[in-house]
Image (tube, rainbow, N blue to C red):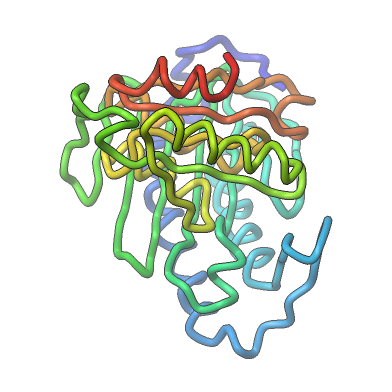
Length: 272
């Protein structure tokens, strides 16, 4: 998937060029998604794996827009999107995209959805952009440049723990009811509290913003988490490594991220 070394700035402008384009594309994609959201009653909704796994033309058209913009700007880069899968590239960069994370809230008229764009360089999350149009919130980060929300610098407070803040939890049809119930039970027993808003990517952005002290989901896909991982790392937090080989990127894995004061408690919660 990658033929160039990490840090090679000859690949169509390097990381800085991709950071600028990712921000532009996220804004454009968010505007298209918002237009669909405002006329969502006309959307034809389909199911994928189960009745809770939804997709519409909005998801597909937003991903197509992002793919086309990336291909035009960086034709050698790889691209992985939720709706159309993996396109191998010939540079050290891979774009990992969820066009609308939180499709269920989106379809049901709730604001908790976002466009999520990550760029991996040599397998590591190097750019993270999450745009939540209904909240007018634009989260951006690039390796070594910090993280911001609407241009305000994000820096996590180490005094926040699972006992004095809120933890995000996620679940889906890959997770058994017993495991999901155990996550809640163990967090509450440790003195914590939890929330779930229907968008894992947006809850990871909330970790970077300090609104949540951490996020745990036993099985999650790369397009849902890698932009948030970059944001959290640049804000001073920690995340469990996500497998960046071809099979790992497309198969899904455990997702765990935390602010500095909650790392050990959440690692214990996840059995790490």
